[in-house]
Image 1 (cartoon, rainbow, N blue to C red):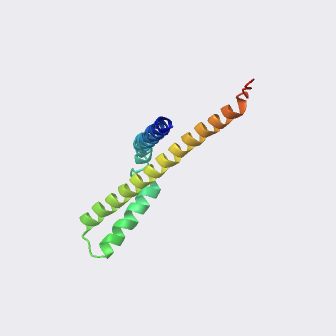
Image 2 (spheres, one colour; image 1 turned 60 degrees about the vertical axis):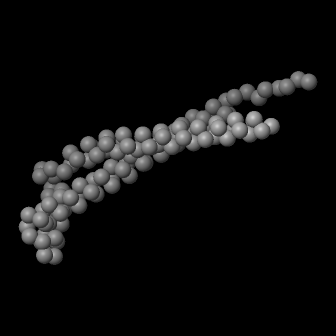
Image 3 (cartoon, one colour; image 1 turned 90 degrees about the horizontal axis):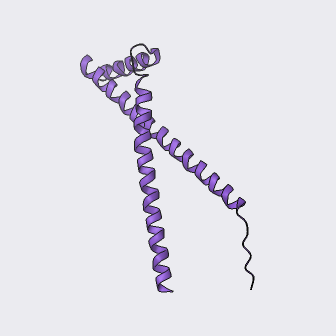
Length: 119
């Protein structure tokens, strides 16, 4: 009985490690994918970006920063928000992948036949 318990703990630990590793890989990879999608929106051709950048720069300049520093701080703040948004999108995408996997596994459990043990 002790060997069975040890084997069960080993399988549980390996499964947890694989699950944690796959989530980390999915989040890091999809974070970069979504970051590349979102960085396309940060251009001077996008009116929303220009308006937000200008408003942040004016706010920093009003609080005592010189104009160049205010622009640098507003660019850094917008880029920081881009990183946070790409990480959030990556988490949502990873969650969706695991939800689909769980639905498939649940459907497979319902499809399996019951095994009869004749004594």
